[in-house]
Image 1 (cartoon, rainbow, N blue to C red):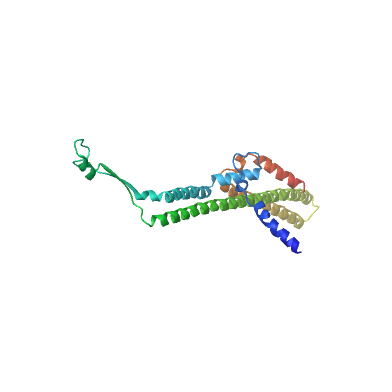
Image 2: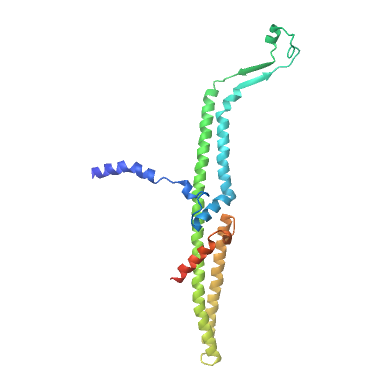
Length: 247
């Protein structure tokens, strides 16, 4: 038992490393083109939605502020120009030039500079790290939102197809009952019951198609383009249709 625990403790760091997230796979880079339709949607959502541009821009902003903090000690170096009756004249003697130089270069180093500059640089570096973490967190959220939306779209599409198949059966029943009613072979109550059942199925199809369209609109809002304009959409729909027919 003790040997097993020691072995687990030795392997634990390796497991942690192996489970580290590659954020270039969370949002596949655009250089990679051989990807699934779903991955293309994630790419588009990351690239096109303005909220994602905000978090990436904040990284650049934090990097700029970090550079500013690192070079803030340059504020203690100064160059000063002098212009008076002695400057710019060749005939002015050396004593006058020493007293009234044409320019001065100086440096002042307050004791606080040695403390504040490293602290400011460290804080600015933390801001960069936090903004980068925020980008990674946003990537995870974008992937989750898109993938969940795609799954709901698949569900809505299959429900539409299933209800269309059921509606076809009810339509055939309705046609048969209507013929029998005209021939006096079934009662009015039976005809009405069949008609009502058929129209209820029609209503369910309308609701199912509306739910699918609403989900499509929601997904298109994420990716910034219409789904029909995304390469692979037709094949995606064909695949869902085939899956529905096989059930």
